[in-house]
Length: 140
Image 1 (tube, rainbow, N blue to C red):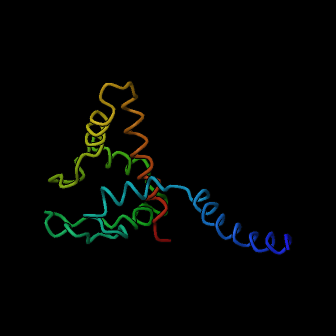
Image 2 (image 1 turned 120 degrees about the vertical axis):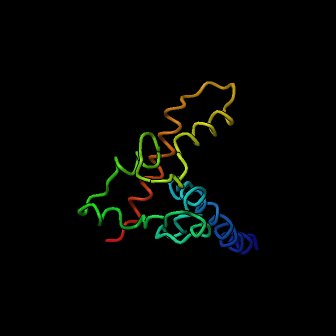
């Protein structure tokens, strides 16, 4: 009788443990999260443009999935970083796109307030996560 109870609980225990194991293996995608929160409204969920507020802009948002293709097959990481950061980049013309380097600095200051932190590292980490995500969504 005791063996029958043990056998019954083994599949139940395994079934209960599987979702926990699956959740532990899932890794957060910071670049995608950054894109969804800050870029998709203009560039669309797919990055091809045509987001929900794209019609309100003076210029159509760039198709971010063809950056590599338009750069001879090489993803232009430095240019993408500089464009997102926004320091000294006149590429956006009327500058509909926010200067994300400044925005990230402000958000960091509001979040950390009196806690010591490295503002440059915080901003760089967010921009690099976003740029790395953009490199992954390039059409081949």
